[in-house]
Image (cartoon, rainbow, N blue to C red; front, side, top):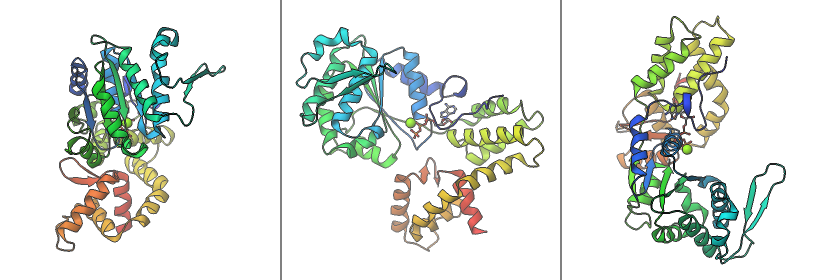
Length: 355
Ligand SMILES: Nc1ncnc2c1ncn2[C@@H]1O[C@H](COP(=O)(O)OP(=O)(O)OP(=O)(O)O)[C@@H](O)[C@H]1O
Ligand SMILES: [Mg+2]
């Protein structure tokens, strides 16, 4: 039997649940000439929801994760390589003939994959503009291309002023819908909500929340039933209580419970045993991260883990606030309707240290 839960990568088909409204919204949105900015904390399901909506829209698309981009040349080369997957070179040769810098294109004889590069020392600005304008020229009003930049907040680290350059080029394009995804909440709002930023009000801002409980419950319960005939109902509920419906951690916990149920059918409390297993397997990392925190941060994380209020008079409000912002930026704390620890298993580890 194959584990019916999946975590860590983009989920689709039978591993994907709910997000019906969001998918429909993005699909509709792509019919307009506008751009979309999608923000959520890490692992809430941004990449998955966008992949599904774009697939359903039937539109041609290019997805690039900016975390994997090392320079402007690399960005240009990767965009061009993705473009060639949509448009065979023979059909766009005439458009490339206008490039100020001609790319080197080779095919790996074993895998058949195409490699694109630009000679070092060439003008990065020209290269990027030529490639970006090619994407635009090869499409039309009726057949706009969808370009998805994942982890868009990385734009500021790839090269100085790249954001300005990119925005200037985008302004000349008419046949592309951009979908920009990002997970570092405050940095993403800096990029799109700060008047001084070149991407100020670039597109519609959409936020993704956790998964709705009813739907996620059904998803978990149905899949747990095979292994836990008489208690799938209570396990599904305990999972969602524990993870507060976090998409990734719920799937991770469900996958571990399922596996434990299959491999150790006699285990007494399969739920607790699975949590212990996950916490133990991450303990070294958890400790290393903990040692790197300043005392105020440790205090905040402990208060959040135990659910005690932060305003206790022990620290100044301004100190707490700026530490919280930093912890949020680094991804350890998330804010949905309140501040909470991002990782429920780290919360568990912290609680165990307090014993
Ligand atoms: N609609 C969904 N149905 C079921 N599980 C989901 C769904 N969306 C996300 N998940 C779970 O969350 C995990 C992360 O999803 P995804 O990679 O799409 O999120 P992300 O927000 O793009 O993450 P990152 O911040 O790492 O880029 C998936 O592997 C899956 O376990
Ligand atoms: Mg993602």
